[in-house]
Image (tube, rainbow, N blue to C red; front, side):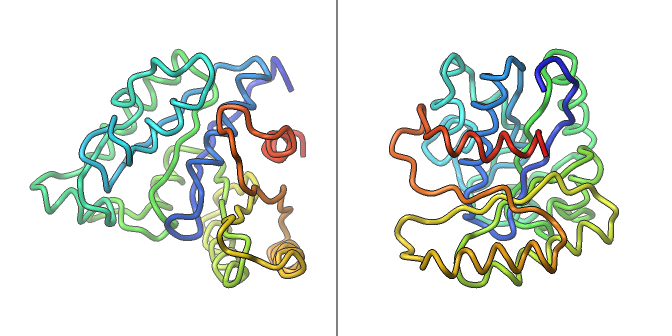
Length: 234
């Protein structure tokens, strides 16, 4: 893989609070170890006061990427709004309007120096990004491929298959599917295996693996880096 040109990846969840930022972090760590110069970008961040506070996804990602800890989260966050809700409403409640063209310009500028870009969406594919566009519209506009991050537990079959269908209806590429298992959920391993089987059978897509608890995010288990690495080698 090293030396080849990789596409930018739009990381989106099947719901909110899925674990997109953890998967984005693993992607960054894997790509750096493979000799690339990736860049993490959060086009729309809600639920935080500023890009550097404790709720910022960019601050979270870069604080755990070796060699990137000095990266200013403000450079990786195009829009940031305080209320934890869909970007359209969070921006509107602060008297602002999100300019998708401006996001596109930021992405174009970053592509001059970094490759690939890891773009993390907000919530699910049908979350309103602006008054005129959904998150799936941004994915379709800015990235050739979407990486779906899904819960490992109960309910994930329905959410994941619907998300896959939505992407295919738009003819948007599916980079892969990664599941995240909340360590507090107590999910039965048999149920997780069945969930994977159902998604692969009816979604006709491969589930790369399940990300579990990570004690040291700066040094995640090799098996989790291999899960995201398999996405590039499939």
